[in-house]
Length: 201
Image (cartoon, rainbow, N blue to C red):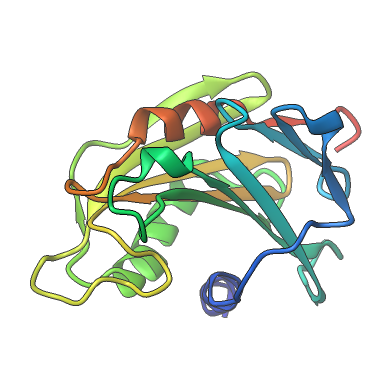
């Protein structure tokens, strides 16, 4: 049931249209840091050329009472040679059991979501675990099969998946791209590593 709920939330959120400014969060003084006070996290974009947007779905809430939140950090417009395709890093926090093992979450996310959403899913590198200021995260690159139609919600052929856990919160990130139109994987990794949590959460 938990896996089905998580998959529904992921598909529901990314299937929505344009992203307005989120009144429950802010990009402090027009700077590079996005702050979400409700969940108590912040994340930084590489430069002001990168776009950042967020939306809160107040009608959808997790077991901890917090609403579904989606953040997108989009590559600079002039950095997308294809024109219509603009790679972006998607981030969404979720509620999990406090103290749950990050490795178990990674396995469940890969098996029950990535392999369902991305047809012909194939990991292209070993999963790497790195320390961040307030915890750790696991990241790896994968692709979908060229023999299947690309995902409408996550277009592209190359992807970075990132999982981080903080107490009873799980942070999911997916960055998309393609060999032909750009895959800023190192920028995505830097964004993921900028994840910070407030001391009160």
